[in-house]
View (tube, rainbow, N blue to C red):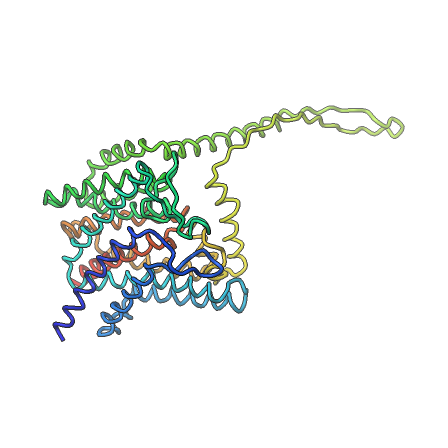
Length: 461
């Protein structure tokens, strides 16, 4: 029996390593099309189905302990609220198709499989963390090589940003475009890097092994290049927040200005990123000038009194209105789509059923604001249930502070980096559906499992 258990632990370890390689690196080629949507069943879904079988074999011997865990309970509550929301959408508001809604709910269930697997694999052996961080190094370096080749050697780009592209159509990089590397969109890639780079920055500073230091530096430089050429404005700012927090947590205060300077130099390499920031500034200036002109125009209106209809002796007040000079229209496309289309759609869904929303799949595939998407699809109850998960993870982090007293080396770098990345990811979630993007969500919840296992173990010691 002990030999079988050891064998299962080994399978779990290498299954997790496979997930860390396959999910970020295998492009999102469709395998089976789902009618009524351009989301497809992909090879990653079969990999996670295998992970579910391994997970079941691991948790069955200690099922009662697994179910009683507070973080696990929060996840079960969230999934249950999502299921109740779907029932409401099917039978009350009639805002979601049954098979599509169920598939979307199952996708959320799928995202949490790596979380539970991550907890188990670290609890079995904490030394596994160092192995997994090395595997992730390989993923980032290969993604960099592929992204660099997309830009300079016309390697194919596979994205899922619309129905036609989601069929697996291979695109090519055009000047001024975004680098996606092996991801389905540049935002997904950028958020993935925000999660990982703040881990390798402390690792570079805390670990003495020269090979790990060299590899960490290579990962950081490669990741910064990818982040710059992904062209995501919010992600560049979020990265600075995440890295600053991770350095504060390990008390490397003097490194912060150096990190910011090097990051800005990298961001300056991307004309796409700098032009997008410039565009945002220009739009802001134009909006301010437009408001100023409107106020100036209103205060300079001419007023003329005219005597008319002398028989009645009435006086009529006549206002002369000069014809204003047409103002050129400036807009930022990403911002306009969010403000004019996606966000109002989610708000309308929330007003239909504030408590439970209109169900998964009811507000299409993109809202570009994960908070509004949560509120629109699963209502206030689903929103609160989702953040209960993070409140409980946050409580574990808070109880472990200061981190330097409880962790050291690789573990300290990982916990500090993951903790620093969380607020930055929440910032990105204001403009991107980060927790719905499969490549990011799967890796995020897997790493969250690693963190929870380490934090709970430290709390119990």
